[in-house]
Structure formats: structure tokens, C-alpha cells
Amino acid sequence: MENSWDSWLDQALQKLYSTKLIRTLRPIFMAPPSNGYLGNADKVLGNSMSEEHFETFDGIQPWDREAVEVEITESTFQKWMNEFSISGHEAFDVETHLDNKEGVSPRDVRKLILFSGNDYLGLSSHPMVRKAAAKAAQDHGMGPRGSALICGYTHYHRVLESSLASLKKKEDCLLCPTGFSANMAVMASVGNIASLLSVGRKPSKREKVAIFSDALNHASLIDGIRLVERHQEAVAFVYRHCDMIHLDGLLSSCEMEKKVVVSDSLFSMDGDFAPIAELVELRQKHNFLLVIDDAHGTLICGENGGGVAELCEAENYIDICIGTLSKAAGCHGGFIACSQKWKQLIQSRGRSFIFSTALPVPVAAAAHAAITVARKEKWRRKAIWSRVREFTSLTNMPVSSPIISLIIGNEESALLASRHMLKSGFHITAIRPPTVPSNSCRLRVTLSAAHTSDDVKALCNALFMCVDFSCANSITSSNLLNLNYVAHEETEDRAFLSQNDMLRAKL
Image (cartoon, rainbow, N blue to C red; front, top):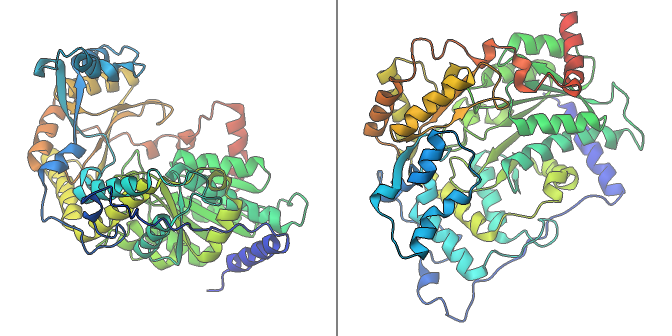
């Protein structure tokens, strides 16, 4: 289908070229030291970018447990139990014991099973990820520290981008320091097209970009949309969570030409999937730009870990796929998988990318190793979905992803449940406003390939003591006022939603 967005993107890039505002990356090659002071350490992986020396494993190993086992001091545990304010200084409790040569006895430390992290594949502790980071640090330190457009972009970053573009079946990829900054950069760049095409004046309402956002999208998407709205480059419309009938109505009623639909692929607080197939159908009907934040789906969904789009066989219909390296990759950073033209625009207009320091070289090397391991050790994806099935079987709760949202209700009840789980040996945090709407406070349980079947059984036994599974999922965020995804008590946020309210009144 002919895509007007291709034409608008070309015009925007031509404007940047004509005004000499296009920004380009300048990769720096960092050769390993040749003085041999590292001994055998620099032979651990040979060429740190090569896969020839990658050692992979057929099942869970002892080091995988480091991804899901944590320790806290007894004094910190007591403060958590009594809801005392914790400043962070408590982290030095153990160090103080060691400095005083007192040692730390088992009585002083509590071991907990972590069921609240996002290391879905347990890759943060993988030997190849560790070795890649260590070798890059030994060879180059933290690398040249600067923005990617000045001196912070190296061949380590380029190789990682290439591997992510391949994973997402996209032409190219742009690394960002965080997933938050990646979402901000995309929204800012999409909105900026309106300004670039309005030739030095504020775009008229018809020239602005219409952004349609799922009510439960991540805060970084919301903030990016707010930013371009306040720059008078876009108008935001919020559709009810995963409600394609509502979205279709909003799209049909909107007379603006430049339409964008943006959605999380796997929602971080509810654990449900966006209806990708239906979004693709609407894309063909309304010719909008489809932007997906696949932060929680990357590496865990699809045969090759390509994410929710691969799972739904919709990779060719996703125009821009945003993701993070801080979840299933077990590392840090964000990325934008897209066409080369979109990459040019985003690296030229995405302020959160332009004005941020690039990822440290050891982090880029570790992330590349994590992507490689995730592709080779397919048992990890199988393991995490086995844990999901086990949880479903034990609780009779319909669970569709490794993110399990156990909605409790009010804050006091959620905090009591969290303290019970802590006392039972499980690290699970109560999620409260403003992260979720009022009266939908919850325990957010996340499963990992590093968990065992016994971990899940023990978890469920403890949950049965504080959660009524017959009604824990009866209140869902989508049943509440979906516009709660912003603090709508604030005047500016009511204004943010006013355009959407007017459109809904017309339907």
C-alpha cells in the first residue's frame, strides 16, 4: 500500500539536508591493547565481537540463580516490614561489618527469591555476558565518554545495532541510553515532522500529527506525547485499553492526515498483550504509522526472540519497534529498530538521544553477548513459558505472560500482602499510585527462566495465604477509567485529554 508517511518523511529529511541540520554518526574504532599487559584475559573471547568462542549451555546453571536470588541485611528487612523510610544508606550495613572485621553471620542476612525483576531470561549473570563486559572494560575502560554524535559511538555500538536490527527484521537500529529516552526520541521526532513541513511557522491543526495512544501505555510514551503536544506539533487521542472498536472510531472521526498509533506490545503492569493483528488490520484501513514499544516482549516472544511482532507474524507491518536492553537482555540501554530514513530523522531531531551520553563500551559489549546467547540458548524461552504454564496450573488463574498482575485493591491491603511475601522469603513489591490507578494496587509478579518449578510452587503456596485468586483478577485496570494512566486530577492533564473527550462525544 502507498504510504503517505514515506513522502512526509522524505520531505522532512530534505528540509534537514537543505538547512544542513542532518546529524550523522561517526564510529570510532577501538583496537584492543597490544602491550600484552592483560595476560590471557584478552584471549577469553578472542575478538570480543566474534561468536566463534561463545560458550553456551543446555539448561539452568548455578550462576543463573544470581539473577533471581538476592540478599538483604536483617536491619533492612526489619525496616521494610515496619514500612520505615529507607534512604539507601542501609546498603552499607554489610560493608560496615566487614570494615570492622566482624564478619557477617547468616543471622545478619536474609536471602530472598526475586519475583519482581525484569531479567526474564536470567542473562544478567551469564558467563559470556560477564566476560564480554570484563574484556571490553579491560581493553578500553568505559570507552570514549560523550554523546553518540560526538565521540561516544564505536564499532561496539554499531555491531550491537546490527544484531538488534536483524533480530527485529528491520533495516537499521539506533541505540539510546535507556528505553525511556528511546520512546521520548521517537515521539519527539514523529511530532517534529509537522514543524519541518510547515516551513518556519507553527503547523495548523490539520498539519499537526494525530497520535493515538493506548490508555495503559508506558510513562515514557506518555511523556513523549505530552512534549510534542506542548510544542504544538501533535494532538493526542487516548483509546480505551486494547479496544480496537474505540480506536477505529477515533481514527475514522479524525480529519487530520498524519496519524500515528502507538502501543506497548506487552503491558508492563497488567501483563496482557496488545491486539497486534487487529492493529495491523486498522493500519491497512487508515494508513497510519504503527509504533510498538516491545520492551517486555523482546527476546521472550517468538521462535527467535524477535518479540511480539514475530509471535504474531507481523514484523513487516510494524513501522518502528522500540525496545530495551535492561529487561530480557539483562543489561542496560534502549534501542529503536526502524528504516534507515527514520534513523536519520530520529538521530537528528530526537533530543533525548542527541543530548545524552552514549552507552559505555562494556555495556554495549555485554548487550551484544546477551543477544547472541539468547538466540543460541533457546531453552531459556521455553523455560520461562513453562513457568507461566506452571503458575496457571497451580492457581487456576488465566495468565498469558511472565508478568502476573495480582490486583489487591487498596494500598493497605497491597502493602500487607507484600510484607507477607517478604516474610515468606519472596521479594515482591506492592505497586501503588501513581504507577497504577487508585484502588487497583497490586502485587506484580514476574517470572524468569532462572526460576525453577520448585520456586513457582513455593511462591504459589505463599500467595495462597494472602491473595484470593478467585477475585484477584476480577478488577482489572481496563475495567477502571482507562484515562487514569495520567493523574487526571491535575488541570493540565484534563486539558491533555480534552481533545479525546470531544471526539468521543461525537461517536
